[in-house]
Length: 301
Image 1 (cartoon, helix red, strand yellow):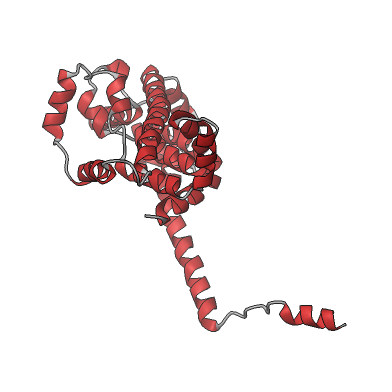
Image 2 (tube, rainbow, N blue to C red; image 1 turned 180 degrees about the vertical axis):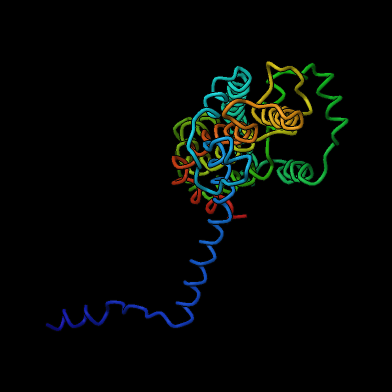
């Protein structure tokens, strides 16, 4: 009985929320709800126009729900050779660029996470310098021209190969890993490459997944680099395709032409929806790593 009484006394009591706590909770839910609405409504409006009839789009009757539902706009976009070429280019550049960038960034962060590395502060300072100062657009363009990289997929893959901010997140994550694991591997004769790829890599999946999502989104939506370095129609990416589609649609509207039961604005909306779907599919699978990777990798400095 005494033991039960003692254990009962030792049990933590439930903390009661005060009026201020409830007020903060209500404010948080209301604020996040409004933020979600502000974020979702524009996309829902674009998606609704993509599946609405021509008369509804041109008359401005479309809100966030399709009016007189139709799939003609999406069929035209998905059957377009230009869209399929641009989609394939963006998919290839995003996948290969993300993998290459992640490998190079991880390999760069590993030596910089060692405090006993000779000249570590100097090398880290060089990387930090590039976060605030760059060579400029014209010198970079001329450099890419000298390297014969213009009008190639390679320039969109290796451009911005190392994001210093992402590298620092991975570096901080490495520093938080237990040193005993690496020391044990060295005693067994493992070198730096074996330690990085067979020990550190499996332990760093959360931060790698987070950086992979960031990099993939940046590569997928990269408009400026593609606009600056790509002129060949066979190498255009989705952002360039959308730019050309908008320009052509404006010409159609100005000439009072018709696309049958599909309006130019509906085609633009369909192309935007089709371009957004791949990223929306990837995000849910990466979400479980997302918050953990960012918080753990950015707390320790």
